[in-house]
Length: 408
Ligand SMILES: [Zn+2]
Image (cartoon, rainbow, N blue to C red; front, side, top):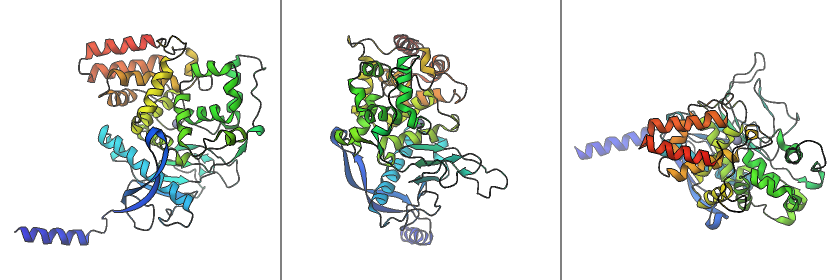
């Protein structure tokens, strides 16, 4: 009987063409002290022993539909494809296992485009070659159906990583500090002008502000920016992890290879994972803050956590005064997602075991276009706690106390 079962199992295994294969690949991971290092890992869930063609992720180059070869002759492309595949698999595992997300479990295979310079088009998937190519960022693409007569197939959710491109920092516009209006606002706008339309993620954008304008480090506005903008905590660490943390280089050029930064990969996947209720139609500080929260949760990196904590508490100098809510935080360029990120990290400090699920549950009460931070996010967190906290009454009081400290 046992032998018979064994023979049946063998026969099934041999007959099953869908048996997933694995492949050893060199990828970039975080080592000690957040330093990037190359490591050989096993990529799992591949449908093919030839290509980056997985059960959950298919990695292609640009507008290609055929996945990249596992032994592609371009070592940099191979490394990027492996790195993206590996970190997306980790992110998916976090959402499926840790957060029990049915939506993520049932997602169809995502197409991941590396070196994709085309602008997105919701009528035709992407623009013609040469129409305002985009560089140095990453974005999540909502599924869509082409306009009649365009002649492309409907597409599913995708993640695009732009090619990196060197820009001479001296070609970037001046800071605009002498302009009228709120100096901080003018400053941030001028700083981000070359990228603000294309860079969706504040996490990425603020990283760039910090680094491609090294002069900001000496302006009196820097502290003000730091005070408003917690993310430099994350941003600084991100670049510490990229290959380009070379201050001499950064004085001259700026570029960002988003496919080689694990936290950006997790951030983009979080947008997809939340997209059943938070549509990928526009970027708001609340949405970016949520994606940043889950990106840092997936990374599980204690250095990021302590940096966020430190920034959310460290200014002014007495070290106890948290960055407090300001209505301007609701708008995109004056403020940012970092306030949301640091607010959510305080929830995590209060409920280390349950915060991830609590925040996911709260996010399901929110909408991309209509929800704000002050009313909707806070209320959603309190309601989620009422329904799922271990001691709803006492836990909600603790939450409220923490929100009051943040100026709500
Ligand atoms: Zn984003």
